[in-house]
Length: 498
Image 1 (cartoon, rainbow, N blue to C red):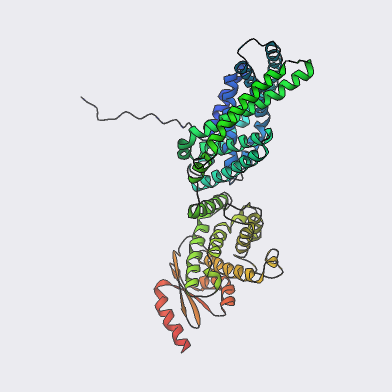
Image 2 (spheres, rainbow, N blue to C red; image 1 turned 90 degrees about the vertical axis):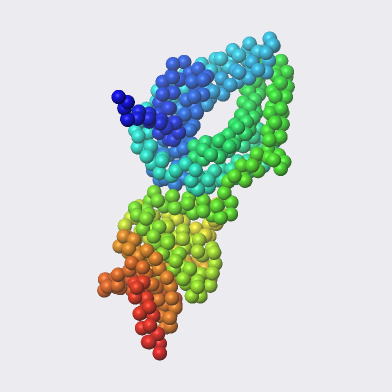
């Protein structure tokens, strides 16, 4: 009799992500420790590099100290393996540059082989001091957190663009200086760009991986040849060898060929730099990526980020209503709307530091941020101030930060703070009961119609404090009513006016 059951599909093994590469580090440690052969050293360095690169990317938003400790604890092992790898690569280049029997070749190989043994000893010491138990614990603890921001998200697009800008600037400097250090910096910056794509933007990486690897390999070869040149000069100085000039010519020729290939790929209309930039965010997409980066940073610190999202939604609805009601010119400026949205999303990050006076902690934390792309330090100052005044004392000319603003900027902060205070008050119980607001002007009052709002003594008392700044700025009463009572409230106000 045929069975209707289907075989259980084998579980797909994840071969990406922080947990995978941290586990791979432990496996490659055992393999490398046997003889520190070139392939094993390379594979361990790759696993370490991927782990460190992912931790570096996540630490831009996640405050978990383990991410930075992971990089610190693996630094000495990574460095010692790098030194060993440089020597192993130089031995390969010696064979590539001179397949004949140059008299100096045996001497070079002898010295490099001696240095390789010393480097293996250093690597063995570093490997013995590497804390495997702590690494394994971090692998377990950080595995879930590393999945919190999905691959391909706006946050990682923003990070990739930052890395592109950094690498492009290093490229420009190297073209001007033509120095060995300049090209080395381009190589390092391109690595950071590549690792960001490789670890966080798989679709981009799949499209660009071939050219990325090609360009990186060319600069890697230039670096290897520069290291070999310096090594040969030291060998010649210490041993009195006079036959080094031929080797330097070989090195310079090979180096020039690699740089010519690099320039062919990175100059002109079809430069890989232009191709990569075209695939990264700009315009509205860049604005969304910048905001997503701020929100992700906040989400690791705000104990109730969903409340902040609701406050942001309500604040933007109030903003649009105030704009249509022509309350103030502040509500006609796109920059003001962006600052209000960010301030609402970030206003409770200070709760990670303290409960009492958390609005002041929020101000200090936002002020310390580096501006995302498309933002300025002034934008972040205004955002920090609006977030700071979502509760507590109202803006005052004696307050830190606020006192440094121009009068027009102070006015804008006050209006945005009044908006966020009311939005925060409408979700004071953090349950999302108020889902939507609309604004109506009906002299002599400003009426806010709130869907889900329950008008009772307790709610009215709580909102009275939250409305005060807005009422002061408007110089008119602000009435909050449930949506179903809006028409009746408007009629009552009209009656008062007559």
